[in-house]
Image 1: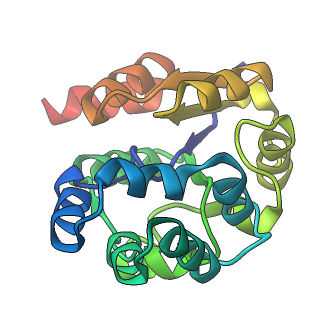
Image 2: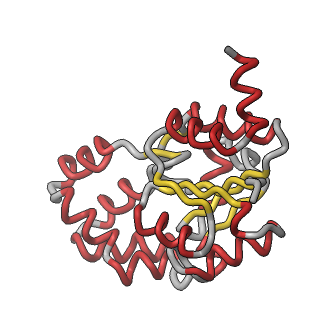
Length: 205
């Protein structure tokens, strides 16, 4: 089936975070970077934030309590990251060729605000934020939700994510799923699947 839609993860794909930031917070507050990461990314707490059972503010408070410093947790988790300009260019090229592009992120309740602050709130046609939906990747229901909302069959959707378990979940749901490496690799993967983008590439060379 022809690919009509591209579904992209946000963090680690379109937006990236500098590891130096958490190291800086660690040094300034005398808290191990590993302890910060473990506290923030612990299964139950993170999933609660990603499925909207708690707010981002409540998540930050819980992380601060776990590491003994609300200041450290707030400083670290207030970072909005940096947008990859090569990914912005790729998304715009896809949309110019009539390909539907959407974001599917395991995010918290502030994702839409973050996208506005980063200036990419209108980069894609849709943003599917798991905190709004109540279920997170790699659960099959999140992929079914996105496909239904976009009115496409799973086989029409190319999905890229930097987490192998999410890629496996997308593939199991019937999407054409690939592990994200970088914008150059992703563009090559899409050129192989989309004749329109292939023509665009030839004209630009």
